[in-house]
Image 1 (tube, each protein chain N blue to C red):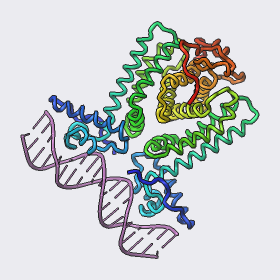
Image 2: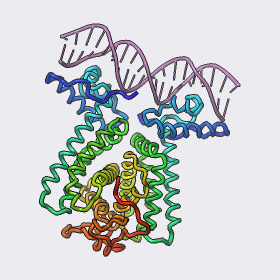
Image 3: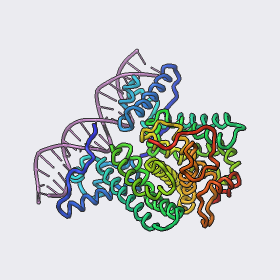
Image 4: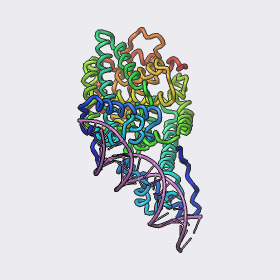
Length: 225
Length: 225
DNA sequence: ACCTGAACACCGTTCAAGT
DNA sequence: ACCTGAACACCGTTCAAGT
């Protein structure tokens, strides 16, 4: 049942490379403009200006096409995160966190429907290992940044933050929001709460004043598992 | 292209009602155990022990079946939220927030793959109005609870919190996590950060606590819509 | 009122024939 | 090496025939 997801062969000639690019671009265009339901191989081939046979010469399944699009987008995400961390070197925690959140919003909001449809498509694809590798790569990048905040389990924190940020951006995108600053501010509060609020080992005291939060900044208890 | 999503007719006899239930249960079972890709009408009918024809007598499309499952699950969510708020009447903010988060986790983690697949399926269905109505209903329920925290736009806050909580539970579920207490604690920090940290804006006096970690450069917009 | 299952249409995929 | 498009298989949906 589980058909292949890997590209079938690499194009060796220039026109073949152009064919592959046309296929990927056509598929992405359909995902952004028409949605997942409209993504069928005949439609992709037609829009790309090639025959279905050519499509299947390079991609053994429709899912292989979506996989390649997802892989490219993931590479761009890692690059964007890397760049935003480099750009923020020497700045304060708050500034660097804001850079990260802004990068995530930019990455996810440019083609909102495409982004969402790709996330949905991921559920159909056997990409769990790659997803874990991606999270690990991001954890590595973000690791030394978060390390200063006393976060013990960076892998868990990275997973949680990605989930939180993604969930909020997607929901906002679906609701038609366009104000990135407003969105970034709300995400920033959630992320800061996650990273900076004291872990409730035995919850006796109610928090509710930022004074208490500020006191724990940079010296919070570590995650454990 | 947009085919109907509404049930075709209501069963009048007991055996017909049993047929409808069998169809819905079979579909849910397949979504939990085999995934969205394995959900086809022939398979549903076979597992339900009825013919495809019978299936189409009550549901005009495959999507109508998924829609009914989603609607039932949403009703259970509203009920669970209502009950958790009632159960926590008179308790502190922290205790009631913990009750809400625990209810959400229980609701979403019981059949994790089913829950995730239904969310994915929502992307294919024209349920935006109903989703907004659901969020409004939840905002109403949670409204007076959040009101005490000085949250201005309860609708936005509700949307964000649902997105945040859902995203984190889904990610944890996919990663195979089973420790609900640990998860609830992490979600609690993010939710508290979102609700309690000062907004990075001029309008902080209504919050009652203006000093804190989030005092940053610039002045972002306040909640509005 | 309810059920059945063969038949039809559509879309993913293949393959024999071409340049 | 690359391309084409008719043909095949599978799944969503219908419908004539049944109880």
